[in-house]
Length: 262
Image 1 (cartoon, rainbow, N blue to C red):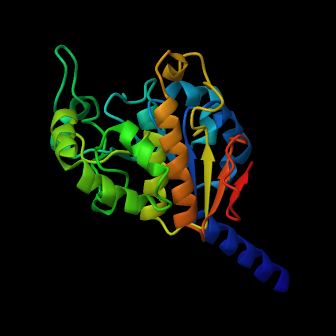
Image 2 (tube, one colour):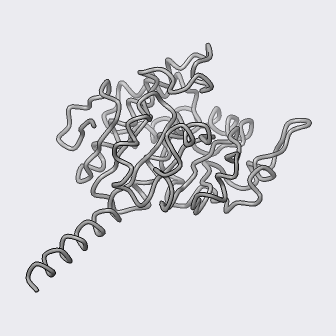
Image 3 (cartoon, rainbow, N blue to C red):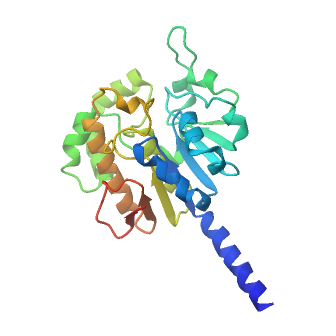
């Protein structure tokens, strides 16, 4: 009886912890490390159009898990039937519904591309997170003067009120996160009571592309975005100090007691 009770308590502990632990998967080079740890997670946030990466890692590492697909406006649904083979509980966006109805000539809108899936728009819990739609170079410039990003946001709102209003209208976007990956990390922490968060392939443009078909390999300039990513990651680690962060990217280190690498 005693042995059975001990086994039951271990099972309860493991299942309880799995509900307080999630994984975030981006498309950076270190995504490949997820295979070693996939058994730890019941819930996984997958960022972007990642059907090729999922197939390369292996479908078995995703089967039976609750998957939140975090999609940007330019992303597409997963191909090869993955949207039916896997348990995608929602497709989460950074936008409101009216901001996703626009489309380029001859192209489907986001709403049209994902109409057969459960689309979740920008939730109320995220309305005041991220950054105002100020110019990126201004966010980067003034971040050096603020140790608290919320104070930075208050400054930006006042300093660049007109520019922010114009950018919201022009871009059909209400808040700014440097990447969908950073949004996914932010969202997972806000909508869950987490003890641990594992981050795979969100490399902040430090380690190059995971696969040759990743758009990160183009000549696009990520220099400012990279600095804002690292600033915001540092802010999140500090804000959620009771949560343990594990990153697959050894090149990122915030010298914090709750930050580690895998």
